[in-house]
Length: 147
Ligand SMILES: [Zn+2]
Image 1 (tube, rainbow, N blue to C red):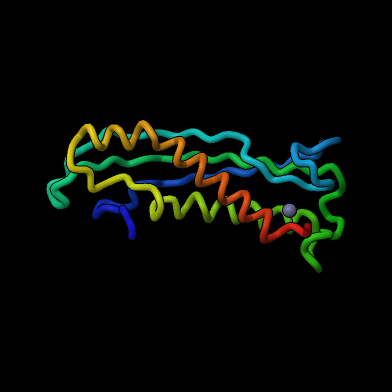
Image 2: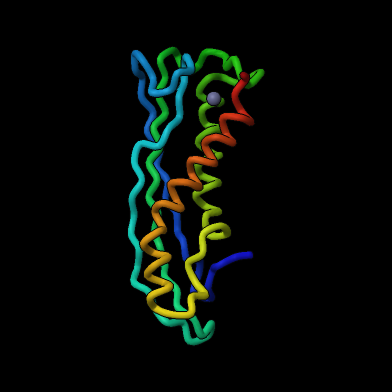
């Protein structure tokens, strides 16, 4: 089920990636680490949609990802055969990006019966986004990293 409206996607996601060399990454894993640097954005006010006969809101998510390397990123990845460490980290980046871009299908932003129901959903919006991204991160780790 999708919650998009006729005017376009209710949730828009913009991602940004920063790559840095460090002596120690945020992750316990050696070599490379992809994590969320910052998460912010905007919620637009609840509006009544005459077509849907329901309340809805639009949202903009700005997700900044940080990719850290404690070794040369052109070294072979120990988790992804045939790939460099950098190529491996970019798989994590694409997992985060895909999760953010498909958020619209998992977080309800429309179809509310009242303005107050719409506002209640807004109050919980960033929690839902954070939980969704945490789940995406766990899946990415499980799928991409050797244990
Ligand atoms: Zn990894």
